[in-house]
Length: 116
Length: 114
Image (tube, rainbow over all chains, first blue to last red; front, side, top):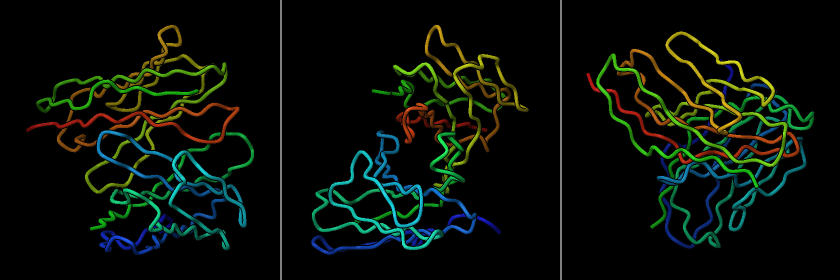
């Protein structure tokens, strides 16, 4: 089945530790996105990548880092610099990120990160 | 700057009732796209509809219908004869053609009780 995989579903870390969230897609999509979801605040864009080896900051990039070495993978690292990392993280992809047409985004099941 | 407002934080209805979810947006662009997504308890957002700013025709898909009114900057979503499986968080979102990122509203939690 084609889709987006995020693992693990639940992740627990101690404060001060970096943690990397996995996102893999087999849809052959060019563009990939990371969102953060907090209760009552909708989804906020952290980083996005329109093509391999390129990515841009979203609205709340501070304390996060990404890489896009392969088309199908877009891992997100939550660093110790992120002041409030506990949240639900969603990865998404879309067919094309550069044509200007807003193709719909397909979402993964999310990773719930808890930092104590 | 673009903005999407979903003023209804939570809605609770009884099965078979009709329910309308409101979405109001702000944008300076004349060309933009509006979306609705459904987030069931599993967490994964599911795409429902995309509408461009030049197409104000209402759309119906089964029990779902959408009413787009540029005059009031609204893109409301109606579920007819609601079912328990409709229980989810629903998000409205906007993207300007001059930009490359979606702006989401805060979401509306819909609970359909049997």
